[in-house]
Image (cartoon, rainbow, N blue to C red; front, side, top):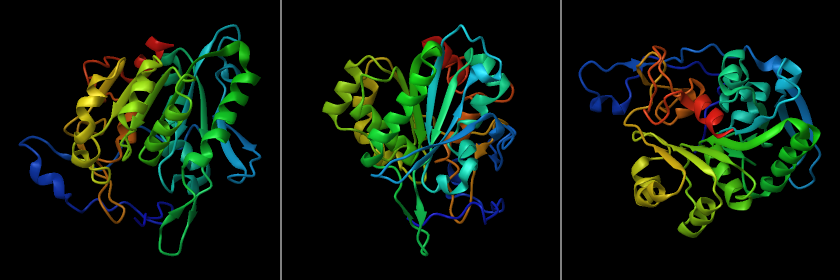
Length: 302
């Protein structure tokens, strides 16, 4: 599928989504997130991993100790994987992948501090708008190397290890779990069009990892009936797993999320709600199993 160039286009807030016909009385469409973005990029250090297989990989690191966290304590490590085309936005990918808000003072306090890593695939856009060289298995080993480097350099402060990502980043979250399921302590695959087979899921589950699988039922791109329904029973059976499959993906204001850049993808962009900590602005959690949102889930496991 050809993807829009988000750097060149403005969101069209006049289009009524196809799924609006399923809305109930009192529900409304929300076209914007309520958190402020593009304000925490300077907290991240830009780095490069030389790699002959994929080309050199740019990645960004937030180190809590460098921003005032206790140097005697250990902190979880969160690696966020971006969706298709997002790496073309450079440091803007920190926002698009979901990581930015987790570097904010507020979220850092809620988690008790955390390292954050944002690797970028070496994506390229064709004249037709298609994206090449996105996440694939060839990135698995070098991305694991990036994780190892950050952990080695900060060994005294490294706690539990997490990975998370949406859309193609959700696929790559699963890919990393298949390849290194005994390495990570927690993972959040979001709006992924790919689910591992039963044998792979069993290995992931038996490794003891904690999973939070998030996927909206009106997802426009990774269609729920195609991607989740055939595997839903298996996913629900996994150990230490929360399946968050809401009817609607919302913004913090309580409105049903619409994002339109040439086509509708508001219900696919659950990453926006994740970046709002799966909480509404009035303090109500999206799911009673996550009373303190994603930050609370991470802190409880860390």
